[in-house]
Image 1 (tube, rainbow, N blue to C red):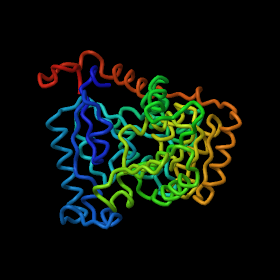
Image 2: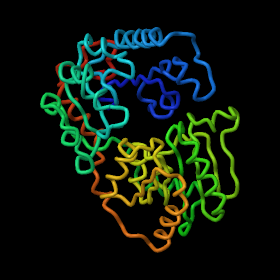
Image 3: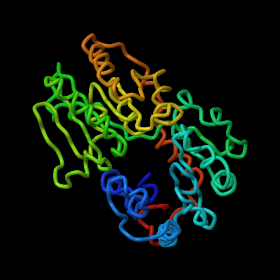
Image 4: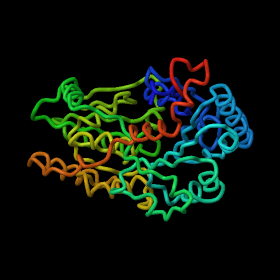
Length: 374
């Protein structure tokens, strides 16, 4: 959207701030819940960076967000995943800010967290009905029909648009360059494994490292993830190479790796799956959330209609599923229907926002003279 709009990204994720936000945009990195709440920080054996009660932490984060909105004076606000934020810190901002409000959802919800209630019911549901202008469903309705699956109330359904998947487009030429840069020959097999940010994915990563050691003739790139306990064990070490096995703490260009590999092993996160389907890889998913009612399992299972993908909640099935995928590769596996998936969600969202705001709202602020809207 940058160019037609001036886009300011506000995030608590350290990696996202400097990896995913392009130079043309700007971002504000705010204190994350992992550093504010003791219960979150204990996962990595850390103490929170400041001694606050949960109520104080929520107020602190809310005031920072208020200041950003007050200073930037946006024409539109996008909120991802939870309509009010994790602790309702966005509620007053959404109520009072004189601008368009857009909610973006992946479509598939974690049923065990009662996200239907956190997103569609109670105060969150009220805000979707009253304060939000549109609900963008970032999925292909043939894979998962958000409105039908969750019996969305009519007032919210009228605002909902299935725009297709939102993902970074990776050209074929870029995939070839990525394979060449990694030293992958025409007859070589390349495996890329990751577990998103890494939190709760430690068991999968350890098993993938073992798998890489068992197949020394196959190229493996295994990404531990910046939020993994394994990554925090050594703050200096960032990567190691053992023959054709490479183990990384984090990789800024992981999207290119996932799109260029022959086999992708992951926890089934939204971004990883969509990066992988842009290539020709067989995909093996081992969700970090083990309940089959949750997003990672449900999304991967429903993608099987279009993609060569296997999903299991048991990491012990990694070896047999990997052997199956490897056999399929060596026997010149069948094609699938991944090319039919709708991957133009970002462009479709931009078109809708352009229509909503219209030319009359652009250029109102001298501070945004280089772009037309914020």
